[in-house]
Length: 251
Figure 1 (tube, one colour):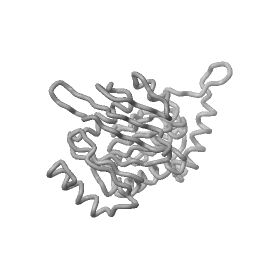
Figure 2 (cartoon, rainbow, N blue to C red):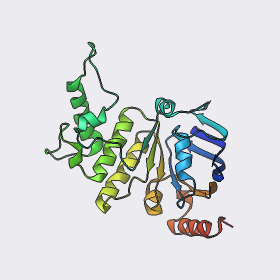
Figure 3 (cartoon, one colour):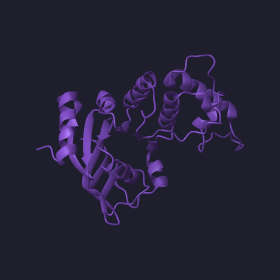
Figure 4 (cartoon, rainbow, N blue to C red):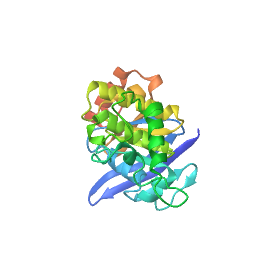
């Protein structure tokens, strides 16, 4: 199996709390992995280690087959690990093109901002990847006028444009309407069509099951089980998750 991310015996403790037991967690190239579990299961801790926000107490992390020492937020981003958080990390008062290129602006040979090029690239992304068909939406549209699902889409497309290899979606459907959620799930499928990988964290197992190739269940800081969605029904998966929540075991 060609893994883009491998975590071997990674653990994390905060004082007296063992937030993450020694965990083995992998993401294959061009795979969508659903990460599910109750509050306090360790999902956030695991993701913060992957994105370089926390340093693990034990274990090893490999990205594209290379062992990564002292992973930081900046190093994770340079590797192509791009998180999209609930807050969506967009500047509501700024235009669409400014949000797409924020922090990674295109410049001319003279070192000046290439505003024309950034607007052109944004227009292309709108047409080919974002699904904006209304003439009322332009690269100069202010992001605060977008729906929650559209904002999530902007963040995902921005990550794809800058060649993110692993996109992490943290509760992306929270607060979205049914139609917005459907559009968000289409964006997740677009990640896979682009040949990239994704970790999809969500409390709603219905959403995860719809788009994930594999689902990993965390419980009390440990991997309680993992399942290929093609080999398990949604009803069976929910039954197993309920059993884990009640007993901490699949047995």
